Length: 293
Image (tube, rainbow, N blue to C red; front, side):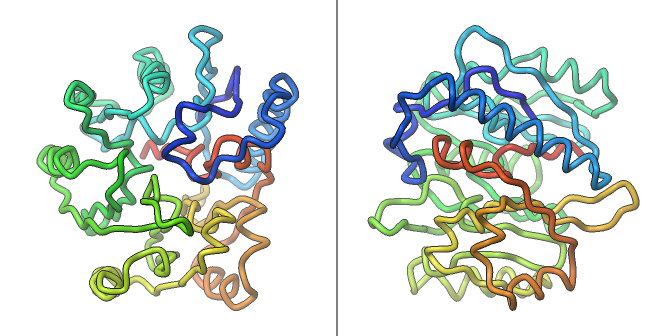
């Protein structure tokens, strides 16, 4: 997780992210301070629940308003680490070699570094586990295609990792492509939380079949729940190997009791309060967490 220095509303990413909200965005210092406080509280709650967290400090220069979302530029696969091509030029500054050096010093396996950012020269993008939701056990990469998620880069990812791609379309309330797959779905070991309503009807059955064939109970979300970031969750393990599903308070409050009960058959629920980060960043807690093992 990256502790932000200059979090704020970013106009350069807003055109492809309908989840960002510009209302009140001119209160720059207040927003930045609130985001740091929300980040620190989230890290504290994760750690108090037995979840190991590596914290990287953002740098002052250049200013990186989205640095709190590291899951968009890097992914870790044990014997290899991948760097990704990003749509917004100011987000490319987030790819810092010193981050990998610090993590390696803290015991994270880095292995071979494979840099896919070369695709930026072709204006083809793939924003890591924002663009893809990975089923590690079955080596499947689910991805809804968008301006930030290009099929050619997905195929290159699959070539170097051994994953198979499962691509589909997904649209928001305005009929625009959903910018990142990880806002519509989350895959746990035994369940999948997904907004099927965002996927065209003719594609829904194939998505459901892929998830059920790999042993996942489907927990469907409404479009309103998707906009409450209920798809932007991450299953992690605590220090004793128990499953914990991390989500925001916004997401938690949008869920029905039946949905919560289904999740809790498999995972403990941990919700963290990050309203400022969600409002101005257009991403939630899953975007803030980059899986390192």
